[in-house]
Image 1 (tube, rainbow, N blue to C red):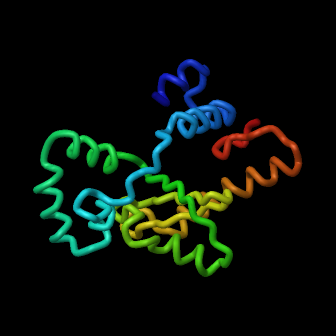
Image 2: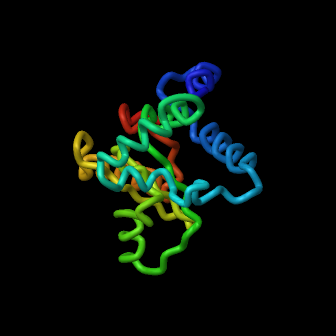
Length: 168
């Protein structure tokens, strides 16, 4: 989908901010009106298995994710570059927000992904990073650069520029 959108816009570098924002707004507008299920019918959120013993997660994968829609769903998660979690929670202290970013509830982060971007209802965002291939400081630096560039551009009312080439 993103490749076809880039082709339509005539750019291979990325989508314009307006296109990205329109896509995000469309996705949130078309989301089901019913609240998402927080638990499976067995009473456990599947992401919780990624926080537990590896042998148990391997058993669950084999039994419940061997074929069909579950296998396709797991494949989509595992081949994604990162996960995005839209949290409907508001934290009043930095410690509570940090605790949420560090481990969430234990079942609302996908700990097998190297990068989990968590966005809260009040617009704050943060990362939960796994340390095997993507060391957290490198990813945090990238996010800090992106956020600060957005803030500086907004305050200076300057046109968006590419973080790679610096071109507007």
